[in-house]
Length: 174
Image (tube, rainbow, N blue to C red; front, side, top):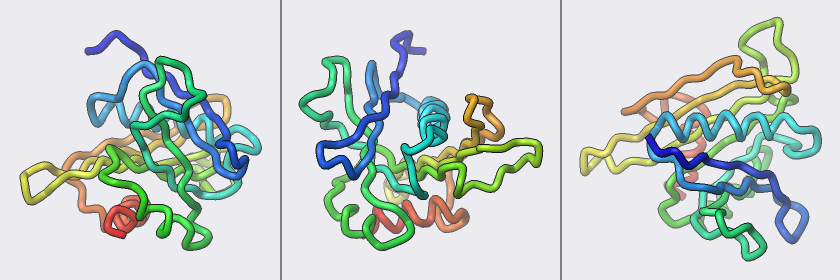
């Protein structure tokens, strides 16, 4: 297990219209670490004003020039699911290491009735089934105070079996 921590920092791009999350320290190395990174991203999605609606993020290895020297990449908002903006934006992603969908509290139905202000998300780690590399995914749900309400990982997923992974797989195919 790598001792260098993975850092996540929310940011706004220069145009002020798109959000992102800087990834620093190092890249997640496993499905579990990507899911743990998703939990941190879901906690960020709980922050008021960060995410107005369900949004798709593409993971890219090119950090913005103003990012710190330990930044290894970023999750950049490429569109929301309210319109078709993410389909057009997805055409510019070339073999992303991961795609993430985040749902703010206003778009999340908590899995536990006693929880409120819960955000949720999904990370899809695309595989190449033809070469025996299976698709992997993780799902997380967390409260604004950081409490993890639900956490799940899976290897060998059928992207069409879950609404979030189906949207992310469609984006990859676009």
